[in-house]
Length: 430
Ligand code: URA
Image (spheres, rainbow, N blue to C red):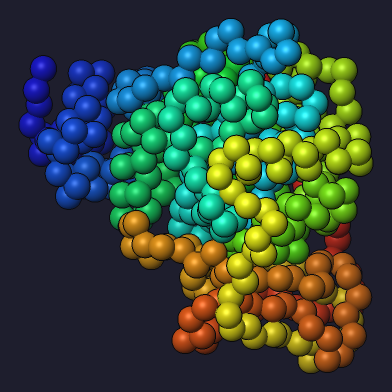
């Protein structure tokens, strides 16, 4: 059945509900290039303003899954044993390099992780942009390569490609039309990729706070509820953690700087919050996958998680022996006085890093692998007058003034240490 794009747009603009047939048509026609970018942009804005109910969201998600291939991961085996598959997905944060650490931990513990990952969206970083800062790394894997790599390495992190291709187009369009922060659009975007990739179970990391796409706890609960329900409706065991994103995760945000920090965690060190979230998500993933005889923390101590990460990078063409890139130019921020580092605002750090060139301002733009920030003093740590607090890196120094003004006001040295904040705020199942 064929529809008229302006009529579909007007229905949503005027607060109506889209029919199943309208949704199927508009997603299919847009994916094939028969609905213009301007028309989809208008429809996305109408959805952003008017919302979609649960029925529309289910159908929108299903139509996105149907826009491309579905990986068939049934019957995967390693050394003659069946492999359970499980994945995780974060709704996006600042300094969120957890995919780089949790995927090899879970693989080292015996489950297989097919991870269709994304690129940066708005001020939030993208796993693929980070991994592509490793020399030679490719995120473009044919479906059969993913299957094989799951059997040999136990994990693959790849661009969704032909899995839910409607999402890739919509994701890029939302990024430049101010329509990212919509609950039904986020839920359908995340779940379409995850349903198409065919894992047996899924753990969602729903970020809450200033540096998250959705700032309020109540709205994040609703988002988590919608996504776990969508998973259950498609037979995918899904669980969600709500986790704090008022502060950036760890001590580095950007592309290669986050890979370097992930390597520290895999070597048994790294910032405590990154380690805590890695282990908690790994435990949830392993439980959901039914693999409960291995301790995720042990895989960090004994190097088996690091071995999995190295094997994954090598299988995807990457060379970890080459030095990770770092911006050619740097600027430091030093403390004007002594005291304690107060709260650091995740949004300020996200914008700083984006303005340094780690994210995109136009679709398809090349990101700078070496752009990023190192945070030398984290909330609650003592600060001496004159000490280095932040180092900013970029290849294009003309970006420094805008980056510095984003950072300004996003942190303070205080007399009374800020109250410790819990990292995990809630846990939800379908
Ligand atoms: N992650 C996604 O995959 N999609 C969104 O819309 C937001 C975060």
